[in-house]
Image (cartoon, rainbow, N blue to C red; front, top):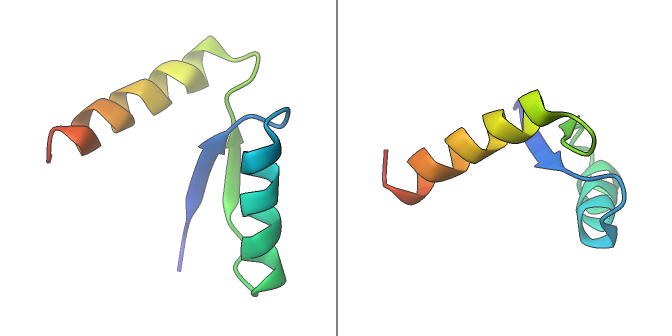
Length: 54
């Protein structure tokens, strides 16, 4: 299973979520959007299409 988690390394909730996944044997690919306009835009596009049902 391949899971990408978009978030910020300064967000406690994101870091806790990553911790819960890894504690349960799931190794997600963490995409840190902090300080990267490109990654933030990528996340925004994915979020938009997901919320639109696409």
